Image (tube, rainbow, N blue to C red; front, side):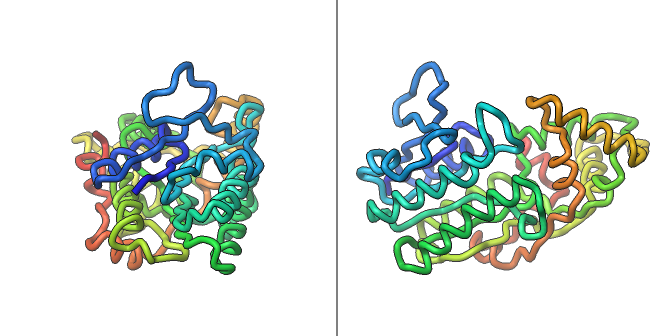
Length: 296
């Protein structure tokens, strides 16, 4: 198949591109127009401004399927979250319907149903529009909702690994207590490959999680154990200081730590792995094996 993959140079997108090409597909990778030069097989895509279907129609010529893997953690002037998560994906989905590109795979996120953050609400809006097009028979859509995605190259994964290396860690209470179900980035890629191959007729929303849930604090402790380190001393950051640190992060746009990050990391992010495992044809990688299998 000829596949248009948005966000192809990002953490998840880069892994998806490699997996799709190994499966024999031809991938046209979407990259930011701010890149100095395009590589063969790449096409410039501006998710901050390409908010009309007409902007996407020329890029869909000769395309059999679209995978949207673009995402941002927080709102910035260069990458406004409303455009990146909602307006531009909606325009892309409408263009797929007009161009006759039936297969659309959307990489979303687990836990957004119960969240009031802009991250969650914009993701939900794109999902709702895609589901509406699917209900009208205009596209065959699969929406993947992963829990915490772990792998080499991921900013959050690097943060977790850096925390795991510390003999003394000071972490916000809500983050320590929140339950997660980490999923290997390679398992997520394998699911996308399946949805564009043997499971190409599968539609709907699929929760993408590892086989077992645990608290974020226990996950960081497991990563430390996988690194061969002795158990660390973990202290709880008082709530007033947690709130203050997040508000300070709000004032620093490049920082991944902000009030929305606190709200997301402080909420449970777990699901039922049965449908995901059926798609993979096996169980996902257990969190206790993530360093050996995904941190490479």
